Amino acid sequence: MEKSLLIVVPCYNEEEILHASHEKLSVYLQNLKTKGLVAESSKLCLVDDGSKDKTWEIIADLTSKNPSTAGIKLSKNFGHQSACLAGLLENTEDFDAFITIDADLQDDINVIEKMVKSFLDGSHVVYGVRDDRSSDSFFKRMTAESFYKVMQKMGVPVVFNHADFRLMSKEVIRELASYKEVNLFIRGIIPTIGFKSDKVFYARKIREAGESKYPLSKMLAFAWNGITSFSTTPMRLVLWFGIFNFLLALGITAYVLYSKLVGITVQGWTSTLLPMAYFSGSNMIALGLIGEYLGKVYQEIKARPRYIVEQSQNLNG
Image 1 (cartoon, rainbow, N blue to C red):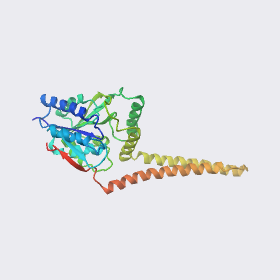
Image 2 (spheres, rainbow, N blue to C red; image 1 turned 90 degrees about the vertical axis):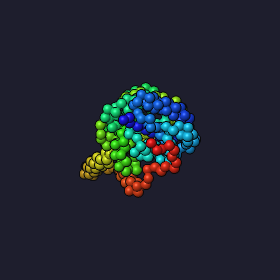
Image 3 (cartoon, one colour; image 1 turned 180 degrees about the vertical axis):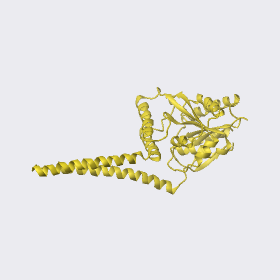
Image 4 (cartoon, rainbow, N blue to C red; image 1 turned 135 degrees about the horizontal axis):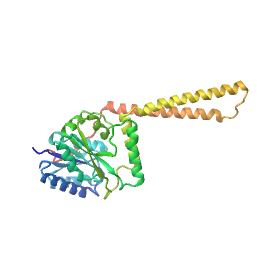
């Protein structure tokens, strides 16, 4: 029996590229159906993450003309991870496999066939991994690769050069639904679920239209969210930082006592002010980091919804 596939596409202010992306994905999905790799009931699902442009109007028009395209409109901008989650959880029981891919199609859709074949061979998760980032600027490539290296060093279980382009089976999505955290970092969650996994490799493409929704500031915020959601390493670093400060304080104390004993008079405010500023600054860093973790605990305890669906079209499988 052929397996059904849902391709989930989170969209935020994508009016410039959405028509072209939908056309490419629709043609590709139809080819998979023609080859008998996926069932005729397979669909695309476009998730509007509270866009401020005409993204939802375009999605509504596409779904009205294409029964193989579904649409979900979130009530506001919940963020990329929540938009992906909405597309997956709102359709879990209607499809056998799910693929998430960004609307800019910088991830190569031509490896989707390899993902599907790996799934049919028994893989429950197939990661799309970028092994060629030559289309990126040097700065983008450097910061992106540094992002993955830092995440791994901090103990976050991410796949190097893998973003959110992946295939997952229905069984994996069911388990993903049991992860209730509000601070979502899906690319770190999926490896913790387990099941048989595989990788496909591709070259990252140039964005054809519109602007990137992940400038450096958002990438840094995303990285920080991932680290603090999965790793206590920063807290451990604060402990070692505190030990270093304590040893430094002992050194300063020994210097002061030595100066007193040998009769050296220390004049001026510098020798007093600098240690005070240093230690007070380090204490503020430590308190700020602890506050970051407490803030996350506060958000999780409130258990507010990770997304709210305002409208949907063609959802039933």
